[in-house]
Length: 480
Image (cartoon, rainbow, N blue to C red):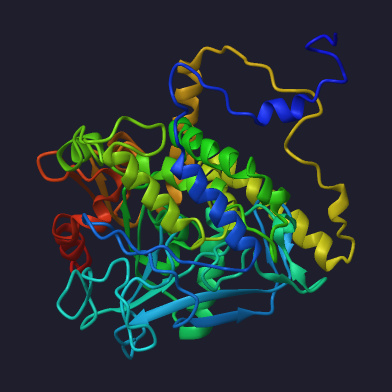
């Protein structure tokens, strides 16, 4: 008689035979749906998921047309080494530039937003800040000429990892160089200067990652900005938000379809992208809002609990991730989120970036550039956890930030924070205001905070509580 572990035994057949257990096996419709989607994508079938039809969700439409393109044939040299030999920036505009060219307001976007902040003749769909911009609105197009761009590294018209590298006529993919927030705003400035002939913008405005950019633009070009508005942003990324974005990237890169970034013309990493977006969405909102909106309700109380989305909040996250997973390029998500992590306006950080950029530029024009000699930041030996006395390090870091932000000491700045924000907590906006006030020489520094009695929308407050955000912004902009 053969042993149960005999090589002659047909184990594969046995493994497929369903055996009766104490309880029936659970069903997994969520996994079945993903498998069907994988099959459809392998056949070239692309089905867009409908928008969320409940709740005050922001509109991040899938924008591939309706914008204008600024094309730079000049190379841009980047903070962390590398360069782009040429690049394009997608932009949209509203209102009219005045005769003195002094009324331009530049809007900076969050991570996943396109240039489509508001509807316009070439794209009549509502934008993500639709009711914030317009005649008589908070960004008043009767007074101001409003410009919004898709960031460098993005995927809604601007040059990013999905773009074609002119050196080989292939997608950059992960041959795209690491970029920074400051790289993004230097590209924007070329657009503002070349397309509109504007030498000084009235205001640099942004929320979330845009709040980083609004400060970075003024840091790079302090004499070319009249006012700064930073909403739910920071002057440097902190460990918690870095950790959250790290988990998103790790999930995304673990999807086999990501293929180290070379998935173009094949099945995209839609599962990893879906899960990354779900993690991100958790950080965009607040617990109290979801308590009120979903509670502990399940989608169908008549059915037994399941491991697939079951609670209403789970079905909400599942739908949000499913909707987004094919709308935004996965590599752009990786690169742009990493740029957020790297953001730091401290003196040491910006000095190092400038040095690297200059070295790359000198190599380029000296025709000696050799990208093969650039070393990765990952050491040969694994990192080991180190325990340090954090207090001196924190104090030293704050002093370094103050020194770095001295370039903004003469600017008028409005900083807005939201108490219910867990991704960019209010202490980070208070830090911006405190540092600016300590450095202040003659600029107007205003700080405005929305408490939980006003908004429980968390980080997404700037998209959803427009009146509460808009009133202080409008008042600040109208001060001459």
